[in-house]
Image (tube, rainbow, N blue to C red; front, side, top):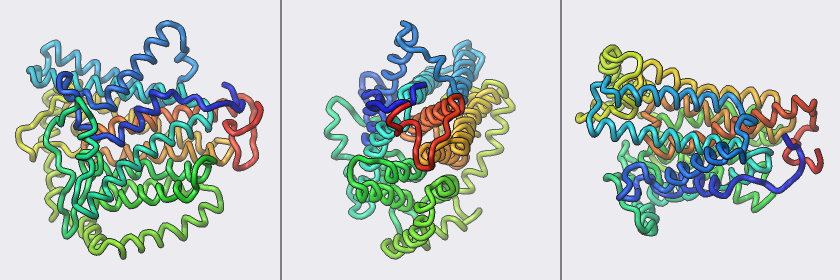
Length: 447
């Protein structure tokens, strides 16, 4: 692995994909192709195709980029393929026209996710490469968060303006960016649901902090303003899942901050929370009521009432389930607001194990990289990937995360970033490299 100073090499198609995941509404699709043809997913499928073709032709050696997160992606892909084959062999009761179409959509999503994860790891060789890719993720996230802020303050939906610019794309379904909770109106930005926005904004917060500290390009005040924007977007979703995700982001990231930044965090976090509650009347009471509602909140009882139904369905087809993506309930109360339950029903125990590996392994690998990295910037980069992975792991128990395309396509980027960080730390170990605090291989003038 090269440790030399050079021009960042993150592929342009990867950057365009990362930006489009967050900047363009996922419900806008190419109508002749169908539900799997959002702009971001089409670009991600292109990434996978180019990665596979270059590997097949010998132009690229994927073996050199092995890491725990890639094994986890392959585990979920394998589980998906087994369940998919089980469905198409007629061994599943969900082998209907709609069920097979839903399974096709799931497999395309998995291939797109693999493309993002694999190309991110293979294209990010140094910290500078990571910065080049992260700038595009942050830019897309800023578009999404600004849209959420406009929605919350004006009750207008600027995402409709973005949609009009997407010539050739049409809306796939009827989505509402607004949901009432208490005295406030929850918003979704460019995502499909306020919960998705809350979780995604929390996943972006650590990497945006890393960018604000270490990016030598652009305006520092602007970089920090984007960090604040993500925190604001998280709060505007008025979501328990978002609040939990934010706590995880802080708990994982703050210990790996440089000393001065850690000191500032102990001051800014409580002051920022207090300022937010003052600026948005009713926010603190609505969040408190949502967090303490318990069984009196229908959104909680709907989740807990899912368990008996899920257990019965898993008992019917315990190993490979009904087929990936095939749970299409006619009653809204039968929607599983829990990705683990949904996966157990649709892909059985095999799929559930694959999903757990897909969520947990990259986070633990990134956390191990953060603990062993030489250089404060690489430590925080790794910790940011770990925080996003742990948020995804916990949040998947509070909503059906893989049914939401922004989450489903953004999370693989953090798998790839986990792998890139893990490989950089491995390279340090193999080279016996020990760097002064605050530096990393990707920022050194020579190898």
